[in-house]
Image (cartoon, rainbow, N blue to C red):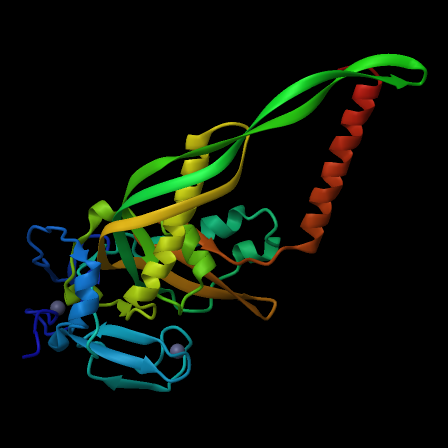
Length: 357
Ligand SMILES: [Zn+2]
Ligand SMILES: [Zn+2]
């Protein structure tokens, strides 16, 4: 049965999720309707069960799935949305089909930044780019700004780690040398190396890994400061007026990336634990126990603008408003900045050599 939840009871118009008020709002008569979510209880799922169970299905009735033949993205829309073009690449080579059996999202962070304030934040951001050409600061975006729920995996695990390494501590030896016929003393640095080993246990909570390989990862990494306390139970209603991407990084591949992120943390933390001035030959043997995951959707505004015939992409965190993206670097401004740096160094040099410091 198709849900009628997103039809306006007053005028029959389509109701979209409104980030400013957090409710469904009719596009025609401004009538509003609450989305019933109830208490959200966050449940972590055992990773091994997911692999054993195989995939389940999203609630098919409330969504439509559109695949882009051009860029390969699979986009999920609330079932009443018309989808004629790919939101990512603009191609019209899209086809609607029944949702495949995949792990549905358990939770999402709703948009709290609306389109208007997202664009305001973009304008402020581009205005502050020191190297962005002046003309750009007044330029307008050409493309639509798209409210996208990007899929993420979160991982929890208790790690048990055994490490071996060599810890280096500096010590200094006083030596003498002759310079221009004068004898002077100086300190020579040496390192004393000591074998060390030990255990380091650490619990990791909600390691956030992008489950999309369709969006620019470098930009996404810079704006993914999501506050996961805001997670609520996934409901297709939140997709009204927005869309979601179906994950293109599998749970298994997500965990491979998650493990790398965890290992990098462990390396840095174990080095700190060992102490000393240097650490070498560090080896860590890790066990990842009680591995749990969640599949969640996070809100991101994605858009681009054109400048001098070139397209630059940017993203805005739909929860925190953080902006990041590409921008043209102006040759004149970079030249001026380098020149200013050279002048400062020159003045410093003159002051020092005149004994003013
Ligand atoms: Zn209405
Ligand atoms: Zn596409």
